Length: 306
Ligand code: SF4
Image (tube, rainbow, N blue to C red; front, side, top):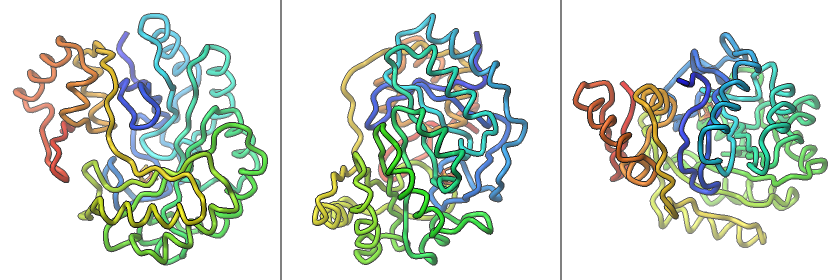
């Protein structure tokens, strides 16, 4: 079965083998337009264009789970922001019925976390990962470029409220862009705020996939210096590094590969680690045909869709 909503599996830096579910297959639909977005630049919106029916997503998911090695985690994401998907609550209820011991994870930019309905839905996930790149309104606007009306103070209130009711593992992602949110002062503000939240883990990373705008990653030295700010507050911080632990050898078709690279560029190491021999041959063929290409960023070669 060729999948329209599933992509990967890809190796996620912290969760192991992750099967992605894309809730916005037609068009990037996000209420942010982050400088570092790996999906390309797009005008922010609060609507997902043509949201897919949950039944169609579940049909694909059941097929995948019945015919493949079980992923460690099912990651709900979007070609944009997944909490804008209008059927998210129904979808997670149904996924929870069929997932077995695979975990569920949602990656959200936190923009809707002050909405009580969103908070109720997110409580149904095993892991919730909230992005928080800045506290100062001007820095927030510069790095995340949100839709008018999305403000950082509501996001902070929402995160605080949600952390009090959520029983799963609450993760925070801070993405550092050189010269934009890489100051010790901004990190101090984030750390101070998070010390009242007590997240399970904070992932501190930088641009490592081709970004939407011409921005630059922080170097390792800066990242470790910023991480020390969180340690000062006794917060569990992890500087994101790529780790490869085992080789599941996923057999992806031509369509699966094109679909995956359109949504998420993969490094040469990703391909080496995850793809079966047959899938690697298909990838080479696609590159020769010009349907995918290689792009260099931060010293790493990425395969990207064209
Ligand atoms: S990085 Fe995430 S939150 Fe930012 S614009 Fe892209 S999809 Fe939206």
